[in-house]
Image: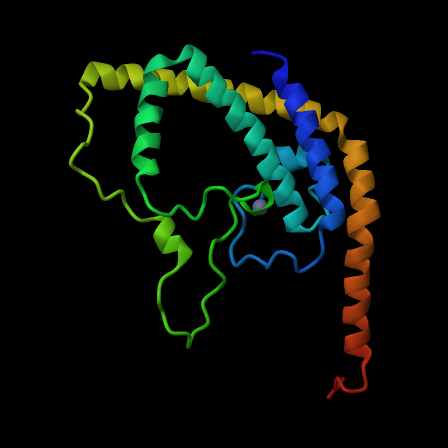
Length: 216
Ligand SMILES: [Zn+2]
C-alpha cells in the first residue's frame, strides 16, 4: 500500500476545513432516517466528532473520507485485480447508458443524503429523484456473456482481496485522521458551536415569549 492514504486524508481534511465556515444550520434539511454513513462511524469517532456535532458537519467529513478510501481501492483494483476491474468496467459502461443519474456528480457534502424531501401527505405524486436513481438499465440487447463457475469464483476471490485492502485503507485513514483531531475540533468550536448556541438561544426566547402560552 503506497503512502498516499495519509496524504490524501490530510488533503481532504484541509478541504473540509475550507468548507466548514460556509456551514449554517438549515443549509441541509434534517433527515427522516438515521444516516448509515455517519451513525456509529469509526471515521467520525477517529476525527473526535461523535459528540455534539451537527449531522451535516459530520456527514461532509464522512463523505470526503469515503472518497479517499474509494479512490485508493479503485487504484489498487486497477493495478492488481484484473478480473474484478474488468467486471467493474463493464458495470460502468452499463451505468453510463442511463440518461440521468441523480446520485452522481454531487459535491461530497451532499452525497449519501436522501435525494427527496419528505413527501407532504396531500401533494400530487409525479416522480421522485429516488425513483430515477433506482431505475434499472433498459438495454438488455448487449448483456455480457454470463460468467462460468470458475470465472465467478476467480472474481469473488478478487472481491475478497479488494475488501481486505479497503479495510486496511480505512484503518490507516483513521490513524491519520486522529492526528488532525485538534485542528478539526478547533474549527468546529470556532464556526459551528456559536451558531448552534445562537439557535438554542433563539429557541429559548421563543419559548419565553408572552405569545407562547405557558403552564396552561
Ligand atoms: Zn451522514
